[in-house]
Image 1 (cartoon, one colour):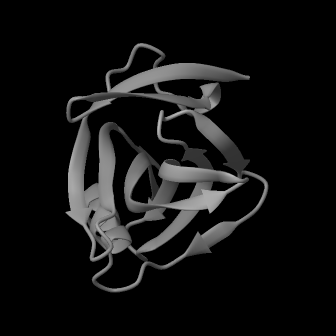
Image 2 (tube, rainbow, N blue to C red):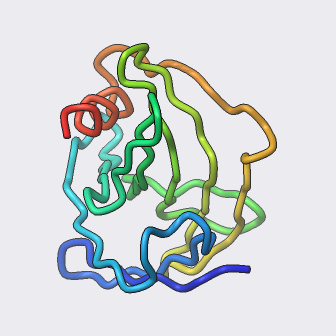
Length: 138
């Protein structure tokens, strides 16, 4: 079961369907902070209202607007949303949920990794590392 959640990114309204059990509150207002633009012109954001500490993990939503769309499921992907956790002490992350979005920010495909351990360490100097450092500094 999914709940609809609206958030604003710049002047564009973005609709993202997220798993209902991952939302703090259905009425929560997102606050997207631009973290970094990489060499491919991909823009990385973190929603500061979703940063939540549970034990040694910090959970949060991240959003990427791709500088150049790519193809998946026979459609062009313009952006994607991710629900992640990070162990700030070890600088390791786990990916829990991912959505691929089209040019109208409609969901092309959802991936639920809650039963699989999709984990890793970010590449030094990467936008992913910048996002994790930002979340860990909060």
